[in-house]
Image (cartoon, rainbow, N blue to C red; front, side, top):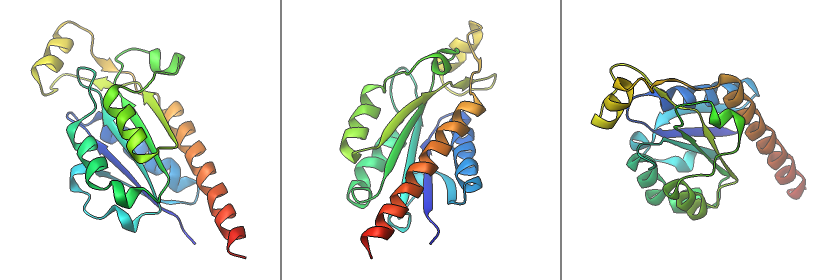
Amino acid sequence: MTTRILVAYGTKNGSTAGIASTIAEALSEQGLQAEARPAAEVIEPAVYDAVVLGGALYAGRWPRDAVRFARRHRRDLADRPVWLFSSGPLDASAGERDIPPVRGAARTAELLDARGHITFGGCLLDGARGRIARMIIKQGRGGDFRDTGQIRSWAQGVASELKELQVERGSEGR
């Protein structure tokens, strides 16, 4: 049986979509069926066996789309394994230490009984939308701090956990 995984995300400038795509690709390479989609566009998460939900941090907050997704679909997600990720620090800190989730992500983790949360480095480049984003770029504090190796490694860990769950469920059915 193929495990179907939704990698849903909330983003304003698109860099979190890139992280979600990398996660979905890494999961697919592990033999799982994964797709990345904007959280606001997901209508029926019940067709998936597991969910990874992520959001870009803006002014220390998780995006509205990700929070709404979690609230709207919490019943469907209650019996599925869920992992969370955030993207945001515009420096190398996410690769150097474990960064705890911001309040919105922590509440979502609790609401969904998430199996884990990780914060990845963010990306803010010229052309970003939003007054604060433009100010950060103007001050020279933007850049791309996403670590593809870290993202792929984390996704491979999620894949391993899902495969273990499949084995456990398979042995329970015997």
